[in-house]
Image (cartoon, rainbow, N blue to C red; front, top):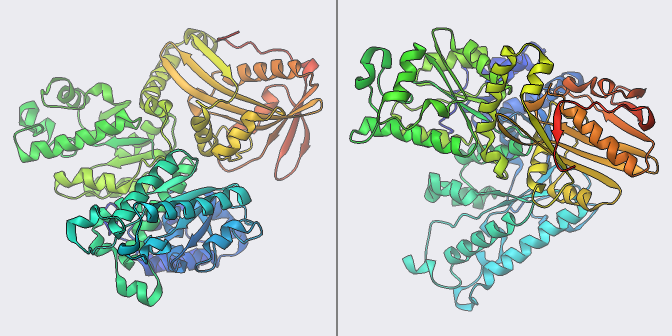
Length: 627
């Protein structure tokens, strides 16, 4: 795991490809292929340098292909060595990162000074990269310890830092659990004796988890990360004494990858769909050759149990909202027979939102899966035991994540889990239903092709919509949508949970959360709107919508609702702003389609305006509940 074993080895011509960056001959796809590999510290340094010395125009082209993120970094350690690995790991996760660092050890000063570099830099989050040596209990004597006081003081110290950043920059803090060093005083008694480092760190971690869960801050579980690779390996005291680096060099890339997963989750870049091969991936053997009785799956045999564990892992992900799909070179009827008739098969055909088994190339089939689910290729993880198939998909569709797999099937769940493809920063009831919602959406697409026309199809869906202002119950999901929705997002503004709460409580703002159901099921929360009223003008600050409901006239129902709100507030005009990005070209003509008139256009934004008295309600075929 510490060698990022799910990543392929770097390309043999890595240095040559880095050099091509400078002359502009390296494509974005080739850049993705470079970072989607197991880079050494030296290789990360090389790529980091090459990208950052590009001319401004070339650098902007690269940035436009990724989500931008500005990360503040404070630490009791030397962090400069980490930045190239942060940079390349973030690119691998779809993020172009800029890291703003504080001076060594200037933690509390940086947090409490409103004019500090980090507080004045407009950061999206700040990583408090503190290991146990940042806290007083690292130097305390056991003999002078009061029960629980060391951990309590450490948590209070951390709260002071967090409060400083919250107040002075309004940012999210990423907080680390601590790793207990691999030595003890009295053996097993250290876990029980007040004042010992092991007990203080255990109590600190437990308190930190509770604190973080009750806040909008995020947890980076470094303690578990180190336990997985072994704390004896994690710590390198010589390195600490010489250069104040808190972990062995070989784990810097792993640490950077875990940080990048969190940033990607904040930007909605976590993967959504696990695409699975069948033969020798979900069972041992080849169903077409070995027959139903010849494949190995189930209890009583080490190989069968190994593949059963893979299915259990996929099933649990599915239960938590990850979409499952099949992409296999097989006869569909024979492949489906395995799921329908084999008594030891844990996964059933109904667990898969899309099932593709044919003799076409897998890259084309994967594109079909993405189109059917209406999700981006970068939302897919493709798992296949065949190295040749993996390499073909990586080459043809570099946006798709294709992990390397161990030859021993019993190690596959561990490898996929370690890669953290499905990282989440919050979990809501809507998340748990995501897989079901995408499966239902695939059914809607089938029905659309059967229908005689769009209007007939929309009426047949029997849609019901619910509008309500922001509230405590929906706050986490609202924040999640604001920070991850890119395509149907008019301004692509990002807000923290605390800022969402402020809009919720503000009398000057109109907030709307939208839920939709139809005859196929519950789509959950599908749209969010934030508006500001200034005298007789209401300006739409944020309007976003899930791609699952595009072209179903939901935006018309929302516009009708906003007009009703505007009339109640005695407003005369509604103003909409469109800020173009690489991802939201879909909604460039959104306001025009709703009857707005363009009143201003610049390279950075377009302004549209609607005279409320001239608006005619759209009245789409959607029943509005609660009115």
